[in-house]
Length: 295
Ligand code: SF4
Ligand code: SF4
Image (cartoon, rainbow, N blue to C red; front, top):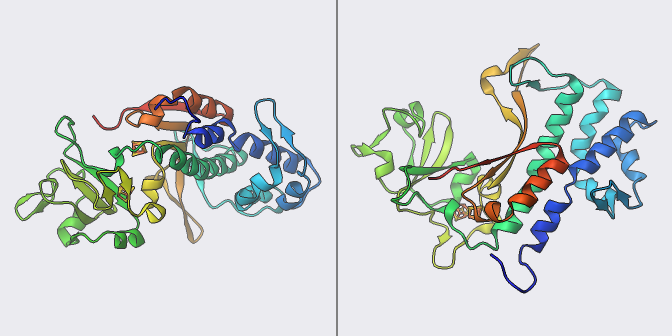
């Protein structure tokens, strides 16, 4: 990916070098220690550049504006609004309310920022790894692309939705049979599993939207959420449905605090920009974890 001209990765690298989370933490502190009722008041005062020592933010108010709804989560410390989530340590003990809110906000902001960074870096790689099933050198028999209900309409593929499929997951043993064969030995299709819907790409197949000669996605602007977010992931919180709790008449969703950033080693830009990703994680105050996924 090296070249002598301007790097096509410049925009993605610039974003990696200036994460918004350190600025968010500064704003949290200003809000909680200052005479502000609403977060909007803090943003209204950030009209000059801010230098945190590691990053200079030229227009902090503009940069933070898209994240204002998330920043407003901190207003509950002044208006006593209830917190509608359960966040636990890895040993399942409770963490305090501030850490709980801060972890949630960090997870959401990192997820949003990394979606942009991943898109900027992936677009220039001409790589199709995320869009094809395993090749014969890999141990996996299929790859699964989870989809939300509205996203299945993006794919003109056979839909497998039966009482049998709804009793299984893609990882179940014994496996779901389709026409007497394991589902992963049949053509790509959309499945409705016990755990939700997904596109299954068996060995040697690829997503119908992949322009394989040129290595690009034909529906790139509309691609499913899961396709927008590889291969650097926010892993500050992990959803744990088994730990959900009923409080009064509501079920509160539960999460485990992990405070990590997950980067998948299979991806060429993760390998190329390992140091930059580690620096980004350090600036964001989370531990980076590099992991091989497909092998
Ligand atoms: S929808 Fe596009 S990005 Fe997602 S797997 Fe298919 S080709 Fe790849
Ligand atoms: S492995 Fe990385 S570069 Fe390749 S398609 Fe996936 S996100 Fe893009």
